[in-house]
Length: 361
Image (tube, rainbow, N blue to C red; front, side, top):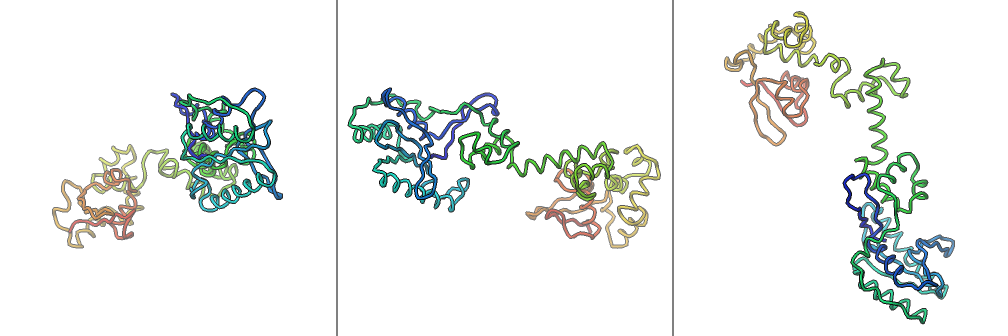
């Protein structure tokens, strides 16, 4: 079986119709147009040999035991989504078993491989049938669309949505597809594997529910702890619930107040004049005046504070240096948490996401 599964191009990606492997499609096309009316073929024909069940790609009915196997690339080398080295060893073992079965039954097995063109396969099949049936068969000359002669009428979306609601075994019974193919289609539609999608769905549902309901009620509904509820909410909305509802964090207020007056801060965040002082103390551990005096007591130069903005140096993970004077704006621009930036500048943390910060001496 070939691993290259083609998708018919349509405007809506979720409605793309599944195409079987190109090699199997070509064999199907050739047999359909080469066999006479009194002969037919069965795909995925099951056989039992030495207590093991195997599946033959094609079985020619009305013949003295004729089988055709199409060996894709995964029969020759290890491929990750075909279970790697372990999968390769199993396929090669089964290939040998199928060969042994055909020989033991006095049947004949034709093996085609992924390097053959449809015309090569047509010649091989024609010779194979003619040799072992003593009958004549027409040549199939037009093989332009042979590789797209699919037997499936379901879509990628059909498979992915069915797998979302059912087990892998149930999905394999519903659709004649390999497990690796089903998983690949799920990722194609939902952007991640099933386990990750379900986990993210629960997280998003929990965060949304907590936004409109109390913490304890959320814990009970989803069977998770307070810490997990808070964690999910912050992962989805980017901040804790209180900060999300009021539109700003304590760190943002404290940072703004560090560089602006009380009145400017209160007006900017539409809060009481006392709130900036409270948040500043909670974030910096002291009041603004003592904080600035402490900074000046560590030999900070006069040009470190320009127009009320405290200048700092930032060093990125790759060593690039930046000069900034607004922690909040800098953090947003570089995808950092402002609170962690402030902790680095205060010496509480050595770095955040590989970034290092210090006030300019």
